[in-house]
Length: 144
Figure 1 (tube, rainbow, N blue to C red):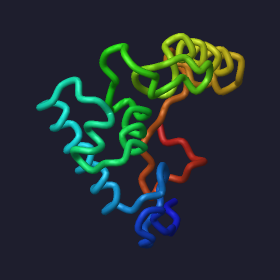
Figure 2: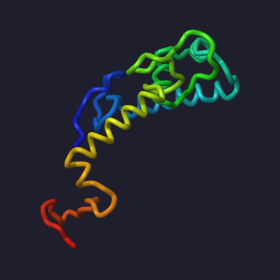
Figure 3: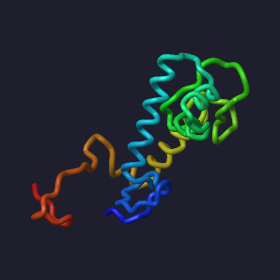
């Protein structure tokens, strides 16, 4: 159920559902800014983070946010690392984790799910699934 919150950027009230607490207008502004960056990089392949920031008047932190989200990627291997893996500290080009740590985290999560009741109840072969509940159906009754 949505809750009423203030946008962390502009302060307007909005229905918060999840994720970053930004109102729709600020999310749209972010998306427009990302599109400007994307267009600039298409026209200027290999531009540095400082070039993009100064040419488009966008903060380096905002560009790093798009890198962390996996929406942008660093090309080339020169210079100091802009991003590092949040687990081991290795330099990375996009996202939050290096490939090795991503594999390890996925493996750990998979083993935890397999060991739990959740894993055994939600298997693809004959396990539980989902269905649509209309207003007339209660969550406790099963209509088959």
